[in-house]
Length: 81
Image 1: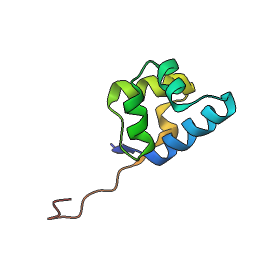
Image 2 (image 1 turned 45 degrees about the vertical axis):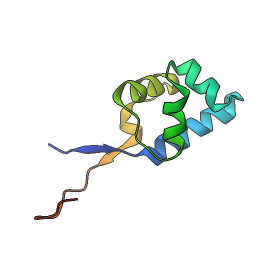
Image 3 (image 1 turned 90 degrees about the vertical axis):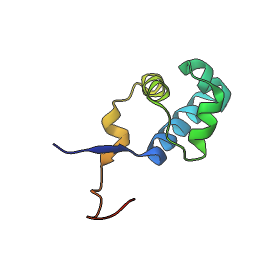
Image 4 (image 1 turned 135 degrees about the horizontal axis):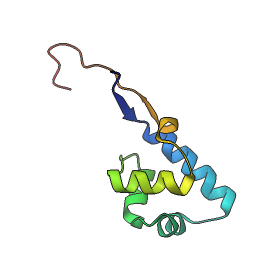
């Protein structure tokens, strides 16, 4: 089974495109998606959202999670990172 990770930059890109197209502020995106504005602000700074925020933002975008995930790179043997 392939593991996947969230591509935060792609999620941000898609949110920003939808936000701009709809003429909304980031605060309005957060309100309309039902998440805290701080969570959206953190995402714009490159931090991964928690599960609730991710699901809510994907619903607001009407987007499947497959569009913002990529296969995870396996850790090198003996690597702590």
